[in-house]
Image (cartoon, rainbow, N blue to C red; front, side, top):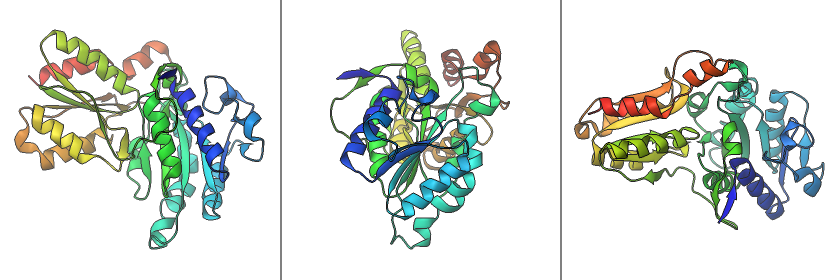
Amino acid sequence: MQQLTLGQAVNQALREEMRRDERIFLAGEGIGRGILSDPRMATHGLLEEFGPRRVKDTPVSEAAIAGLAVGASAMGLLPVVEIMFNPFFTIAADQIVNHAAKLRYLSGGKSKFPLVIRVKTGAGFGAGCQHSHNLEAWVAHVPGLKVVMPGTPADAKGLLKSAIRDENPVIFFEDLLLNFIPGPVPVGDYTTPIGAADIKKAGRDVTVVTWSKMLGVAIKAAAQLEQEGISVEIVDLRTLTPLDEATVLTSVRKTGRLAVLHEATRTGGFGGEIAALVAEKAFAALKAPIKRVTAPDIPAPFSKPLEEFFIPNENKLIQAVKELF
């Protein structure tokens, strides 16, 4: 095992995949020499190894970056492009939603359109609402896109390799704060299957379903609840679409209680999809109403105290879990 941050794990995955397949190229704002070339970031050192033909700094235009990816994929290349902040996805949405997501369907499955769009996401670094809005539920609503949100460095590396090797467009969300938190990562080549959730902690009394940075919050809350005699099972989705329904339902049928935890705002958040799934297919197993622990329905604040209020924490999750009893 090696200790890497999520950014370093992504860097390792990109480096290994680019050595494996010369069709892979990277594009994005500042990925070669700008702010994203920081040693803690995912593209550090890649320009030096692979050169400007395969690591391309782009103009500040997310629409152009996404259009480049779609066209390159259609011509047989394997683009891995970057959207610097999640809200900027809206600028790139036409090419991603109206073209990338639909091209394989329109070909009747005869054509392949592999591309990966890496998106930095998450609040917690004082960048304000224009840079911190979590939009994964928007993206998951689009048929034809796979949506991946790892919560650990090991999963980030394995899932990114799977995303690059996939024959469909994959949106790969990387929480910014996880770029600075180290964790164990296996050495060498491995992949993590897209569409498979992971039980990060087994438990008997309540299921917590979560993903991305909120996994760490769930783990902290579970440790405190264990001291009070409440055994928490943590399901890390890792992939929102395709959704691993079986793992979620099996866990809820075992525990009889469900809390869904995500950083995105509440209304229309992906937690509602999890709640609907359980209500439709495992209602008889429930011993209490489903709880959602989310950010409030406000833009992400800039000030540190307000941002801390905005982001769900272990205390809010602990309160919600206790209400299930």
